[in-house]
Amino acid sequence: MSIRRRIGATAIAITTGLTLLAGCSSGSPDTPDPNATDFSDRTLTIWDYESDDSAMGLAWAKAIDIFKDEHPGVTVVTEDQTFEQIQKNAKIILTGDDVPDVMEYNKGNATAGQLASQGLLTPLTDEVEARGWDDIITGGLATTAQYDDRGMMGSGDWYGITNYGEYVTVYYNKDMFAAQGIEVPTTYDEFITALQTFADAGITPLATAGAEYPLMQLWYQLVLAQVDRDWVDAYQLFDGDVDWQSPEMIAATDTLREWVTKGYIAADCAGLVAEDMGTAFIAGTYPIMVSGSWWFGRLQSEISYDWGQFLFPGAKLNIGSSGNLWVVPESAKNKDLAYDFIDATLRPEVQNILGEHGGLPVSGDPSTITDEATKLYTENFLTAVEGDQLAFYPDWPVAGFYDQLVSAFQSVVNDSKSSTDVLTTLGEFYESGKDDILNG
Image 1 (cartoon, one colour):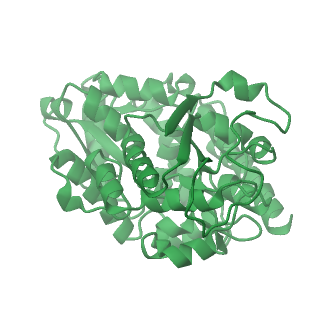
Image 2: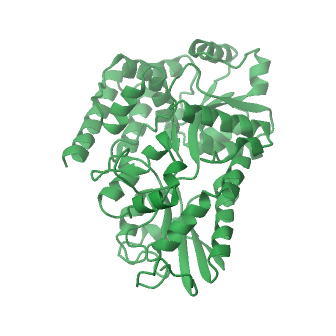
Image 3: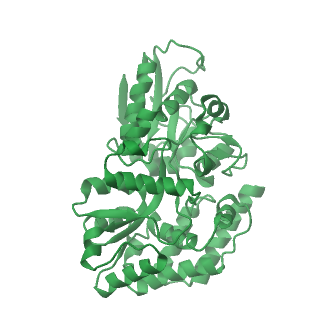
């Protein structure tokens, strides 16, 4: 039997004790025998924040069907959360008595790494090795699944498993490009020429938003266009020092300011959220949107004009990583069932559903994808993975950095602080957080 529950934001926000979401207990307080084959009267509780009609939602529904076929008698309870709910309340949730058996969670030092270092997540290394998950999740995809005792990603035990990937790409309105006689740019200079052509025609070319992640990701992609893998390892993995006044950092920050002045970015974008950006692009207001693969399915279903996508021109590195992780809380009561569900999400039939719906499977077969736009989108991701181009996200290195980056680039767009001052403030916060992790 399957049960889907929707948990409201208010319910989580007002719960402060250790009995958060009481009634969602996932089974007996006794640890089940992992070798047992009688699954009667047991419950697997799953928390995720993907919509039912998304690529992940559709694929995971198939994984649940597989799980139920192989575990007769188990009741599967899936509870809808939101990204923000889990992001803000994870520690409270996981120190309580009633926790899910398996939960979707964000990856990186400041999220999964922090919970792992606090002993709130179950190490999965033995399961990874026994089930061969490390043969499927490799390279940069595995980086975000492993954390050391400080919560640093890239080494140590496995604490999460992904079954899909994600990356930031350039979405474009083919009709608007054709109207201005613009070809798809293949170099950074051609990209700038395209932006200027639109601006000269009185069209603001770039849809973005400064009150949430889009603007900081655009800045990070501008940095990535000038640096190499060693820089990424220093920034993300603390494998070296980061110069916050380097020419690359200054240039990327100055470029954002310049793009506002030249009309490439709307001056009011500092107050916009990601939804504003996406709906404006969908409506055909802007010809270009630099954002994540998580938009792909929605664009396919809602855009009425001809559109496409390409990797950021001229960059050898690209924002992206594994998708969110399946993690198993340390106090979960049905860990064996959680491991079996995770395993089901990596099955070929589940992975191919991800691929068919634009979900970027980690082990699917692109040849099974019939839609040409989806196939190109998937092939571009595989190109980034195989070329070791994925460079993660700008807010990952230290806890609380997301809010700092949002504020910083709002001030750049508003021209209220110099690039030097913005980067000095960011660097101080980054270095303090880095010191807490390394020497805490």
